[in-house]
Image 1 (tube, rainbow, N blue to C red):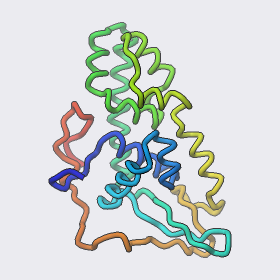
Image 2 (cartoon, one colour; image 1 turned 90 degrees about the vertical axis):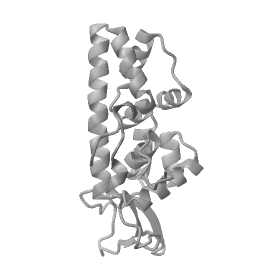
Image 3 (cartoon, rainbow, N blue to C red; image 1 turned 60 degrees about the vertical axis):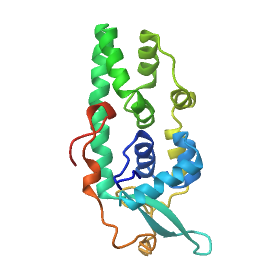
Image 4 (cartoon, one colour; image 1 turned 135 degrees about the horizontal axis):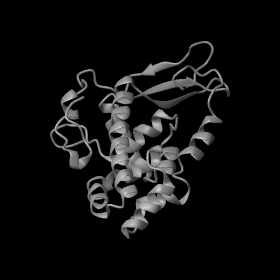
Length: 216
């Protein structure tokens, strides 16, 4: 969180939010998929919880009815994530057009403006990895460590999704959140302060250089 209480909508926050939306629920699995360390993932999850972009839910496990706590994305979180993905898709299309036209200077300009969002584009599948390597080669630009980590194992996302889905109850509902036939899943609101309402002003005042948008 920033000093003025606004939500910091950086690439790492969106990668974690995207992971939660895909049922990657534990800190360890999110860290593996996003290439972030566990401590940073935990801090980001706390931010997302505070802003009501995700919630904690309790699920009854298969063994001795033991309950487990997982994360689930809220409607507000999903809307925010989809808006950001649409914006990044538009940026990717501009880069692709510059690449296909052979305009190195324009492509470099788009890359400079969106470089911090490359890991998120790769993680979410917005940026095709083959196109990314071709584009970097065309510009004669080396990958940074985070980009190299994302490229190293195909981004790690789909592998983690498959691994995580093996633990999900087959009685899943339509939004991908697993549950039991006795509807024992309950929202866990014990971590929230009722006075801490969602701050819609936190989604304003981000310029195009940071990949933000005017209002939400």
